Image 1 (cartoon, helix red, strand yellow):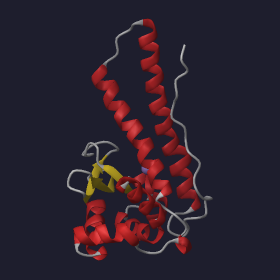
Image 2 (cartoon, protein in one colour):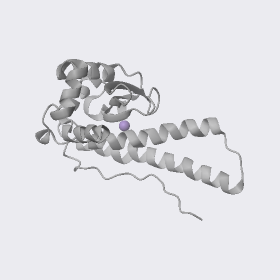
Image 3 (tube, protein in one colour):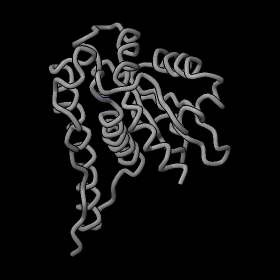
Image 4 (cartoon, helix red, strand yellow):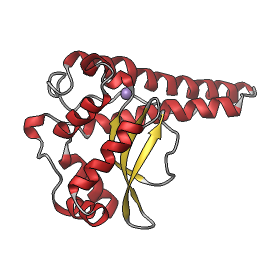
Length: 204
Ligand code: MN
């Protein structure tokens, strides 16, 4: 039988204190070790359940299973993107440069305007969710997505360049219920080099 691959929790690209004071060690540990890990395990459990059902020819509830897989796998993938589009505040540039900066300026008029719209998307995501900067290959325009949960309102085939987790579990230890303060802190720890790399990869 062919060996099948499963998801795994990627290493963080920095140590637990790297994002302080904007994201504390305790907050990052909890978020990564408990929440992110749970999505990895959750997605794998569904893949195993599907494998087993196929092995023995048993039916599965496709609607419920696929909905759950979308949520768990989406959670895993978005968190993986999130960790790597953050970095130590001292190592970040504050705003993008090069082709990415030009693309944002062309679309939004200015970086400040992009920041304002993205902030508003993050602030108003209903319940638990994400704000994301994505790229539409058809119009060749950057687009802000407001993702509910980990998988709702995602535009098919749009390439995600940058994400911000605004689930309460992402900030509650550090900011209690004050999501706006967390979003403000996010801008200080965006790894623009990584976002640019993703943008350049999409452009190729
Ligand atoms: Mn999260």
